[in-house]
Length: 199
Image (spheres, rainbow, N blue to C red):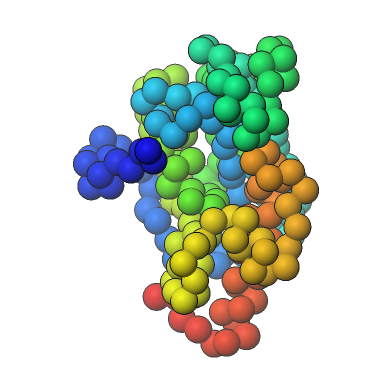
């Protein structure tokens, strides 16, 4: 069964959480996480991928595995291809988060179903550092639902197929990040071509 927390209740737990935006900035950072499950309070981050975009061009990338405390379930290995051996010598979460926070800075974060990633980052930052992750964020899934309401599904793989894109390694953080950025740029161009207002 999918974990679907009550959004209002969840946001009360995260008072420093950034705002969800509907816009197409020129500069931003795309982020994706691979985790051991769906719940930030129970599960762990095992891979982080990010790219910095400036003037709509990718200028820098960041990726790291994260060594989890409680190991990786075989189902997650089957889904992501990430094995316990691959994360064995990787940094612990506090070190990996410090690197990501430096990379992201005060940039707007873009991601697909990014509320999931933001909640994980927020809760892990609180656990490690005593403060939440507060960057504003843009969800490509939310934009897709607004632009293409006639479609039932808006998963990253759905957008990839719909926009005729190719994800080199689905369910791996950096590959998903690049695909998410391609989708974001596709929808930016769609909006400009059609003269559509997101808000």
